[in-house]
Length: 241
Image 1 (cartoon, rainbow, N blue to C red):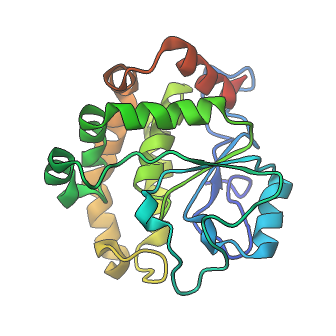
Image 2: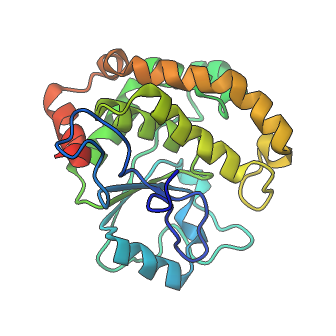
């Protein structure tokens, strides 16, 4: 990852600009900087961090979390509902914890890209609405979930692959988020919060090919969620035009 892609916003971690990645669809040969960023829950941003984000260009936040995840946690510097002047907050969850088939299939693998294709198949309306929210948002867009790894990883994989970024680069961006948050109990409370570097690399050896496969299969996945051609084009142009 280039230094230019890493976003240093006070209080934040695991935040990156989606610009600077190779794609044959862009006249510059890379995705555009300053259009879409990925990150974890925005409550980690300090007031200074929010100013950092606005200086980067944040105008829209697309929050992928479920409503019951909006409560405060120890160490938070803000709340989900806190006004952010000049920034539009959009709630666009990709999951439904009350959906029995989804939880039965995806619950055990929610920290792995194995669940992505199932998410598209079982909850297409939610994922389609999420992508439509990004497509119609005012750039720059911050896309975030809780850790900024799994749900954000799914959405960012679809965005980057749709913009022509090769699967190996898409998967490498997802893997960077795994490395950023693993072993950090202050950032996530799932099994990866206890992992050391060796455990991370063992997991990635198996999971990165799955993420690459999802990126390579982007057209079919977007068909599964029923995303129309116009929205696909707007999402592509957001990153390459």
